Length: 155
Image (cartoon, rainbow, N blue to C red; front, side, top):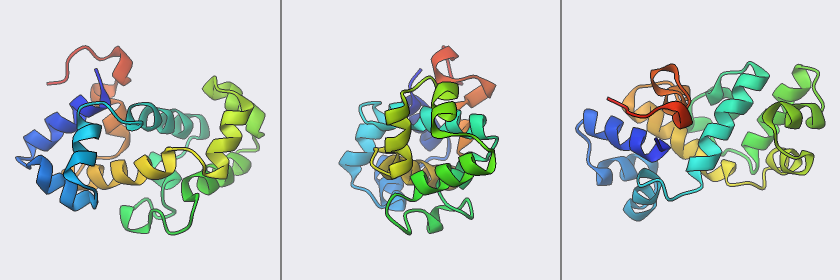
């Protein structure tokens, strides 16, 4: 199952059009359709954000905005990376230790914390989407309590 499948089903469940959702998210219809069809970097970066949240024992939304609300997302360049770094340091983990927990390279972890990955673009969009449908953002990546790659159907 793809993240885009979950977004589409949740959008349809709320009886929203793709154009309605795109407008609420502040992106073009084409950009939203790319996410919903599973052809965007959100497919990689959304679930990766959830894994970071699990590793840091921090609500996913708090890795996007200090308040956990989309209105405060992207207030500064590289905000997700800065928040991830701050939460990592509070947990007493090095970049290397967190990278190992996530099974990614230390250089990729550095890029995340430097704010130079697509996470900076897609995390705020996904947080806005979760607010639009009235669900915690983590539920987008673990619908029915299972990670997307373990889910075969989403009712």
